[in-house]
Length: 112
Image (tube, rainbow, N blue to C red):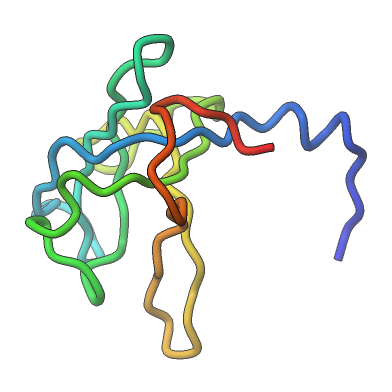
């Protein structure tokens, strides 16, 4: 494991957002969804491709709060320009479990 400084950690903008739309990313090489996540007034709505189809349906994702990195550069993923990275943890069988707040928090709140 590589150590980083506190200053390095402070540079990463991990923010809470709410999934406002989730659709199947039909053009993706691996099964994925396109999420539109509202990170509040300051940041707005961002798109992201997420490979979480094994544990989640689009219907259950809408309304869920998630944690995302909002200050990475945009990344082209097939026809989609991804604008944030929605975070999660990989299980032993390779499925991704979303990183979500335990309780409701304001949109755009920064992980501290």
